[in-house]
Length: 389
Ligand code: AMP
Image (cartoon, rainbow, N blue to C red):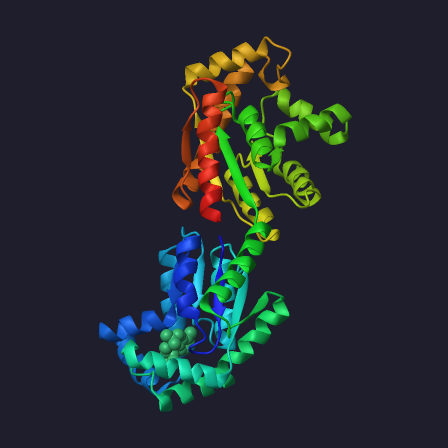
């Protein structure tokens, strides 16, 4: 998710810049001013409450603002990101935004402040007043709006300066130049955000080999719990010995072992573009753990894929693998194979169902040649990356 707030005095050009940003980055636009004007034109209770305040150039109460923002955000949880225009406008609203972002497991990437002197604001708004039809674009009200801005809105800048996510842009340039500067800021932000994919599929669906190849192609870090556990077994560490025992009984490795290994891997991976998770999360508990781990790094899941292969084909693939050198200790007998398939159905299928309700899971046909399946998976990831840009 990419969440941006455009900040600046009335007339700074926030609305104009927003128009191109929402198109270019496919963001959900939230202008509290627009929402309030709509409420007024529909004569809702909220609109009637706000009407006289807006007409005088004052600020509507934080209570009203929190209601409209919360509703708009929670009605659109699957958007690519939000672009805020005219919000947060008070120090309290900055805290409100923090809380709402946490609720969505995301954060505000940055607040872009358009710097425009007071007299220029007045000039622009008077000019706009000739055609905007807005009753608050007249000189007396404009002066009051700017007074409110200086007293109540400017302190918001300090809030974001302290957080280190406030970026200033000179607003006294052509629309195109401001545009370019904002685009550069967003590019920089996007390069910081991680693209995280979870690849699901029954054992034998090809999620491992496909996941590894996808990671290589897209420059993502491959995180597979299986090989991490294998490594511990090879090292013959205490954890390794415990894992061997569990494998032999066809059981899952306890979460505290898995979590620590994944945490280590994420922390060690600096300067990566994102992760591909395979074989994790395998249980509902692990799905909460993954959310927490990613959030700790200011990130979240970007895409969930499930490779679908019919059961009989899975058994035949796993059986064939058990007769080769690639045989895993956990699929060297029919009973172990069946046990793993059952574990997946019992513990992992509910995770996929949960994700499907929350974010949507993209189902990929896993039948056919490796390259064909790889192409299908790649196309999904390319789409995902595109909508992020
Ligand atoms: P705008 O369209 O952003 O210039 O907003 C027009 C008017 O709506 C403002 O002068 C305020 O009266 C009101 N308003 C818009 N957004 C907010 C907000 N976040 N907090 C308080 N009042 C707001």
